[in-house]
Image (tube, rainbow, N blue to C red):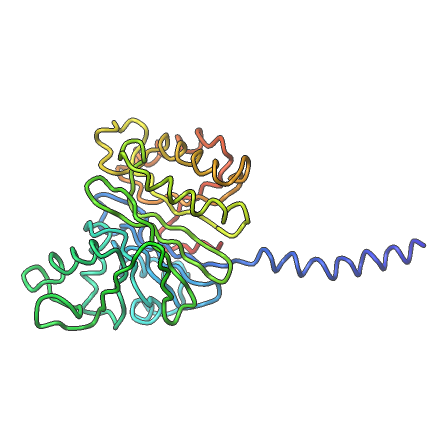
Length: 318
């Protein structure tokens, strides 16, 4: 009897362990090229996202590109040249809004880049077209706007509720509008098979913004968390709690983030956010503010979220 039982256990483990390992296999590879907001031009918002095991990525925002890729190469995140990552690995840009700290890398690197598309809400792309890719401020590397058009980039306006498939990546992306002070920003929900990652550009809390954009977003993604399909949310926290509401300018603090997470929990079910991956983006210098912000987030994390503070050039696998 003991021998039969032992054989049964051995067979059971042989069957179940590979299945368990398969369910925990990463679905996404995220490479932060820039993680801060504010004055550090070498480290501004930009995140490469690709299916795990793939060399085909999209880039969410593009505040810093070249320097961020160099950091990733130096940390052996990429085993090819900076030029190859820029030209071959990045298949398209998804811009949340057209503030300089989210697009400056895209503009500066455009002469050395390869043919690809720029995705975003129509209002965002219009700003790129009329303020940046013009011959008065730079050069028009796109296929619309001022002539001559160098036609390196193609504008791809997105509409909420209409997912787009990004050629060459296997990824599908859906856009959600956000309220960012006087602008309409964007959040992007990226899908790889049955797994998702959510990236938010700059956003203020609904209560301060007099908006319902975040609530609508939480309502949309809450069921994905309940089902275990949403692997992470990348969301900004720009200032420590000492920043007055009147001076948030469409950004979040630890207090406001945790209030929004409780709204999200109302759509996931109690306890569903425990150990859920929350990647904190767009922290603003100076360093003492960043240190304070991180401390406040950890102290107020009553939901048990897995707080991740990304490092430039270091891959996150989810």
